[in-house]
Image 1: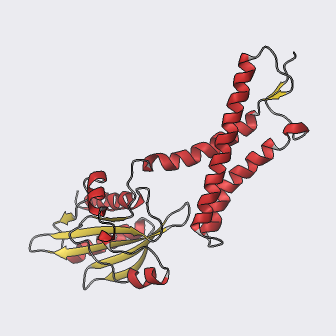
Image 2: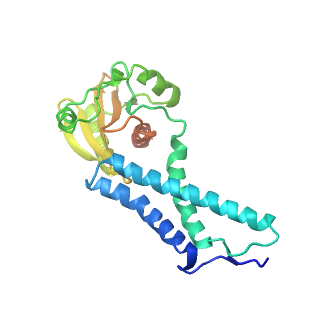
Length: 254
């Protein structure tokens, strides 16, 4: 039998639908999160877009692998397609999602992280905002295993100790939060409390961030907390944010 293998098949014939499906899959991967971010529909629908795109890409890659193996193992195939352009799109979708998920595979199903867990510092301004949005509770021990899971997974999350005065450290913390792109919603110098909102690029998820500074005779201590408004797992985002804040704080005293 004569081989008929096309690396780039025109959009015609019985395989005309493959390339458009893959183009649609790539578009859906970005449109879903974008429409979720601007409020067209909920984040769960946006996640479904991503899941659908990922599933279609995986299915397409499996099919093309089977086709490729048939080409290698058969003496001749009639009208067999090997769509290189569509494979590139499928690989792109697959890798984009996979690279987002890989760092979070070993992360626990928690979304409330604090450098001080006994007890964690308390939000003030964020509470009514979260209540109006029916967001996750800020109660740290709403999940009884929260503290233990945090301890097992995120080492080094302890309050930051500085020799600076409370007011000086307060000003530095506010600068750091703003430099990291967070929106300050509460800047209370009297109580040395800063509250901010961090918005993710991908879906526009909002997490509430709190830095509570406490003054002692010869030092100041900054407790940092970050809590997701929606979802069960934060995929490690809150802990990563706190590590980043702590790293920035260490730089100012270096």
